[in-house]
Image (cartoon, rainbow, N blue to C red; front, side, top):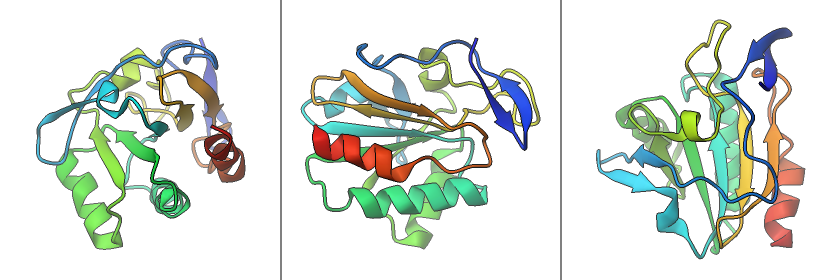
Length: 167
């Protein structure tokens, strides 16, 4: 079982996250219009899967804004923000912030946290996703992962974007 931290305290995840070199599991999620989306719909594009606890937190908001900005010049890549937030709340945040180049993937009835083992099993945010970044190539192979060391920290944007540019 993998672990991260929340304000320095250990938090256990459901299991081991998929490793670099493995095929990205095809997960389902709910789009902002309540239709079902799937990772496989983005085959042929580079993907940055941005798993986070909730867009109602400051760090998650900063992260979403930053990836929106960083990915805006990469037409061959899509950013997919995954959280347990309802799609309405995700849409409202992005509309308020002027973010329109990120795929919103609500996991409230999806399969992501189980398929990728990012669900926190204990701690104050139990049940939500840990902060994890996956870079996935055009053929759905995972080329980069970052399980952020503490939920209250941001990911290493430079390393993520270097991987996107390398693909």
